[in-house]
Length: 61
Image (cartoon, rainbow, N blue to C red; front, top):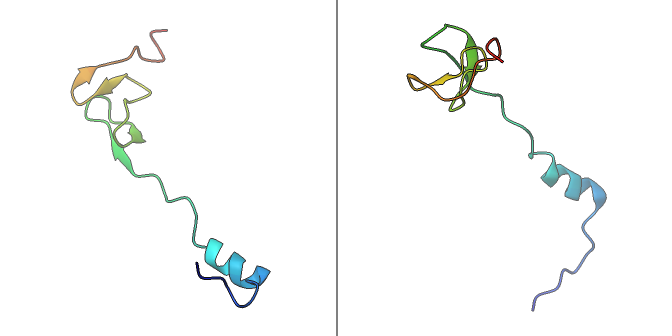
């Protein structure tokens, strides 16, 4: 097995790890109520996803 000749410095290691970051959320407008919600998730205001009500709305609970 190959072995490194030199120890990887903290600066070099941290430069490599600097590229891991959260991406921005993709938001879309609800077709039922018009509020903005996260893509591929049920709307938190009306509870609809792809034209069907899948969860109870926050106002109904």
